[in-house]
Length: 463
Image (cartoon, rainbow, N blue to C red):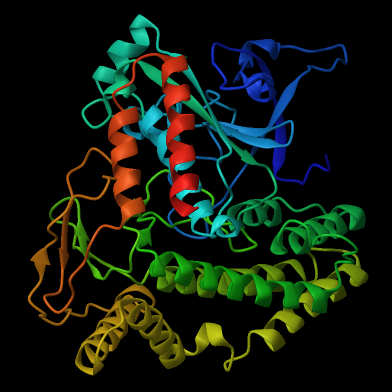
């Protein structure tokens, strides 16, 4: 594989995870930091290795969280739950157990695999980086005690299986995040070949898998790829909203090419929905139905960051080679040309109308209800994109009369406006029921067998 500059090797060894079929058995791995000697005066190579990725957020970096602290690329797949990688800089911070423990809960792996099956059955498989398999292992007695005390990402109160098992999830390693590119540009090399490779990688990962051949890294091509990636990602969020799917945590969880990658916390109703979601006080409730606006906000922030970084890198005294400075200035110029003030990314009114129409058409609403959805769209845009403190209109918000699958052990209150009659679709019920059923398993083989059966149920339901 071609290794982009944000990936670094970590040694691995065989572990105790069970696969559901022979092709997945080679992924029974865990990181092995003890294979890196304190002193290495003789040159030698450690095999096999997993390539973990460093990340830098464009906002809200958590101290000590340096990147994929529990995941990496191995044999073409992104394997999550392999233990603490060198990017788990907060491994000794009890306040960041979720990411710092190196552990993936069974509940998280089940959600990733089941939502993949549900979306593939709906024809939305191309909108995500799919979880293709799950491996499971028994927790040792000391690990069971730790899970019971809340020292990991397990949630036994929600998923009893978490008290006994842990998991790996496998996704194709065909993606990169904005945070990977940000890290690479913050750790740039002044060598022309390195800078050239980085921008080739940028263009490559802006394009979806299968459309990454014959790329040249020209500034105009990079800017056009950015335009297509933004539009593709926004369209994917609109598709999610039409099937009543909300990821809740979107920060850094989508790819450069516009797919969603961290599938751990889906709220899946299977039908369009508008409402409020609140887990804890005093945090304000979140308006659901408009997650695409979060994508818009993130891309606006990314472009502001990229413009500043390119201006800095192309300054005299930073890069000594005039040709490199000229290349970077041309990239910045082409990006400005494509993402001008008339671009969809900055068309506030059009984005609001587009979101309202997307939901209204899916809900088959009359004129009055459509006007109310438009009002909610304007409110959500002001809150999410512009950070305005805007009170939502009072449309008689009521708690929903059904229970969707919970995203975490923290109880959530979900309300909908009185003018809508929300419902849980058949596959929304299947998703919630499957999580309940699988979450009661205590044996790895039994869990994987039952998971295969539940994934098949989505396929049969779609057929």
